[in-house]
Length: 429
Ligand code: SF4
Image 1 (cartoon, rainbow, N blue to C red):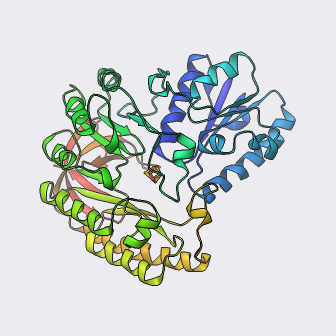
Image 2 (image 1 turned 120 degrees about the vertical axis):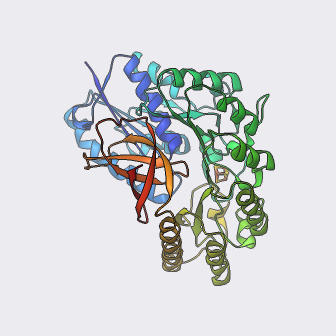
């Protein structure tokens, strides 16, 4: 039996695309292997959101060169955002790559295999929303479901509109059918995926879609990522409040606490617009967990802009953030902006952001000690076979002692006995 290995970089969207490629390969009779040395086909599903992710990929690709020399029959494929962005340039950089598969062309993987095809597939795919690909679900409990593809926002630092194309929403019927099918297979939680789920639109808008998914029997939890603050509507806030399966967590990228920088980022909201949405969310759903993304050292960011971000972190008190140094991405408006910030200054600002947020996250988690939470058991934490790992409805990781009568997929009530920065410890009530 021929074997394949997929290395995935980046976000949940990429993870789910890898599930689709694995589904196609399984359907074609291939077997997955954890060791690239044993594989007949190696796929890199790449991310180009930051320079670091790109460098990491090219360094791993370089290591595969010697393997290809030893076994020329092995096929090397590059998929994902770097494939889409660089296209045929990948062959110039790495002539040992066999084929390049863009983000909208996963369905062509089968053709590449069957026709022993070498080359490039990066064209826009207008029927992307209809593709009905086999999917290999890596979790028996939690499943990703694409509700839309692409993005129309053109934030000035971001490559996604170029690598994933314009927004396309799937029909609500095909989404609901997929969720029903997942429920029939024992899936308990669905995570709805889109670059900006808030702008989902078919005959239904996003809150209306949530209402429909909330009705699917067997599904116990609904999450979604990512939300653009400008499109967070009152209707969505009420859906989070009223729909029992929609979890009390939202990832709402702020990016900067300075309205001047937000304008340069083309985010289409000011800090005060953002703050007022947070206040509404917390008024309607008091226990909601809010996480965010922050970029340190965007072009023209002064010390005062940076301090505004620090003040925003203190004022909002996110449950957690992902923070990064600004990274120039080829082809984006921000990469050409004047006033690029020195690496050293970016590093120092990032450090200050992380320090402050760590203290806030830890303090917020501590408040959960002694409270009761409901967690969905996902499996064993790494190297801890005597424990179970689950998440609260607010998306906090929680570890509990293992018990024989518990299994993956159970929803259990626990008492939080200890809170750390990155996880909670609990005991069954
Ligand atoms: S909303 Fe902005 S940051 Fe998010 S994917 Fe679209 S362009 Fe990129």
